[in-house]
Length: 420
Ligand code: GLA
Image 1: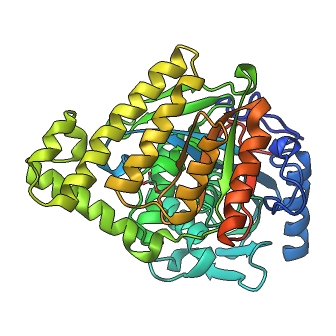
Image 2 (image 1 turned 45 degrees about the vertical axis):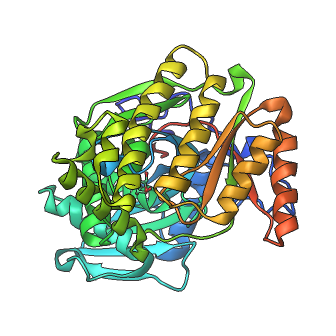
């Protein structure tokens, strides 16, 4: 059974999963389990794990994807613009209702850390580790006044954790969607994204913006999602890479990051401080890049300059994509990377090396993606040149003695939906 969502998400997605397109070979560090991403195989695997965990068939299986942020980094919590797209890889939540008011949580990726707790005792700080994300989603759903009851959930995923592809947001979104739909509640997607974000902010305690959860729940296949983080307005922006003869490589630099280590929060505080110095409520209110020059503190000046220029790069990228010029976006991606490296100072050596090596081998543009300090870069390349880009990055890493990078050809996919 394939229960397609009423709101139309999921249409057009390659049901055989993006893994059919993954050319990462053995020895390149394949990306997670090489199996159908969000297709029937993935649903079966999640259901099978539910059976192993709870001894029964699940009532349903839901999928929420990870995301790649094409451009618009650290702009979301400044009420600016972001342009992510959903991957075909993501997180599955197989779930069934239960009578005892408990929330059961199991993950195939964390077999040693099952968790079961009464739904009504959930409170920020009460659950730690991986289970904080799905427990937080249940808490946030309840806090929103949505009546859910006891539920058993089994999680299965094919998304690398710590690779800056929003595995935690996918986990929150899969859980929130499963819980609401399983209990007969239809929640508008933007509201569900806000609920999932609240799980991350208040339950897991990480002060992220709304981008990742919005991407996981709102994206359309073949499109990136322009999100105005002030108004909440969205626009689907065409991103048909194969038709343009292009690929967007996600290159996992293997350096792991954690948004919880304080550096992300420090950048957010710096932006708030820069806005205060400039006399505006948030940096979104500033559009003139020259305005940052008036900030005396050199660090705050650089942070503000990044956010102001990044917002305009997002809008320039959207204009090019609307005009069908995907290749033309390359220089904007590279400019974004330089800004994140020099002004926002959240890049890391493996990312800089990978970006330089990709561009040297002919990539049209490349940048780190996500919160920074580790994870992945993206490189936009002509399909026929993509093997050269891979080889160049692989060789550059070998010269440094770093573990080999992982490669994934990203395919803009649909936001979350019920698999069965
Ligand atoms: C992380 C956060 C997002 C966003 C990005 C940086 O992915 O979860 O909200 O701030 O970093 O653009």
